[in-house]
Image (tube, rainbow, N blue to C red; front, side, top):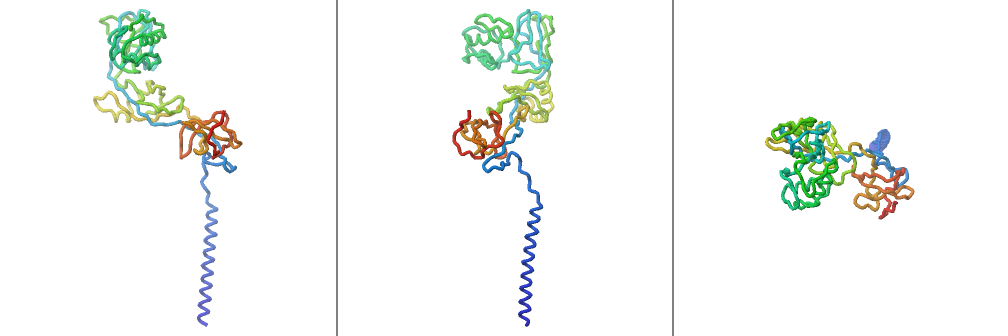
Length: 354
């Protein structure tokens, strides 16, 4: 009688264990049902149609890190290259002058503010050669006036100078460059205290009247280089958390940016005594973010460099331009009105959008 009793208790115990296991499973299932699953971001969510992808916009500012070259300066006077009476003066309100600009007339003759890597120390005529000629050719070309780069003053160089001078109402003497028509500055842009010479004042050989006066501090700020694949649009750089405009040529000419740079630890902490230039890294982005669409790479067809197509759910191809990537997805802009959804993998090799 003893053995059956034990056997009965074992069977009963096994049933109890099985019931406990079932209860745990049910409890676990209930717990799983009670847990809220994290929401999928819209840009990663597929539409209800299998094989289609929901298209929704997101903001993109094409942020990059670039290097700025900051040039420090001591207080200095920028002098005129000739004598006479000031008959016109007009300086930017922010005090930042740039190469290729016009701030003064003297005796009714326009004077051009101009930077060259080698100071312009002589007049030039056809056949003259030297570093100063090469520097003039380089700057004229940078300013948009096509010139040869031969290092020899020729018709091409003179014609480029003639065009620049004519843009401000001047008439250049045939086949020559007169350095007295230029106010030479030591950088492409320069922070100054404004026009130092008053209208009507006379500049003589023994005069101490300067064209511009610079204060000790930042003389110029310019990008070492800019990304060639950047999205087109107005750009800003960030100094100590604040945004300041930067030109297409990489130059920063906002006086408040010069002031901010001079007190920013990112600059002061890297600057070394005795060195005039310091490179600093800053954030570089679009001033206004643009709308983009996030798609998997396989959703693009006929991709050539940064251009290709997506295919809408109804089979229509739309031109797409790749602007970047994020979280393993490709960021694109579209030509024309975007469809509600596109095919996630069109399995096409050509882009037939018009």
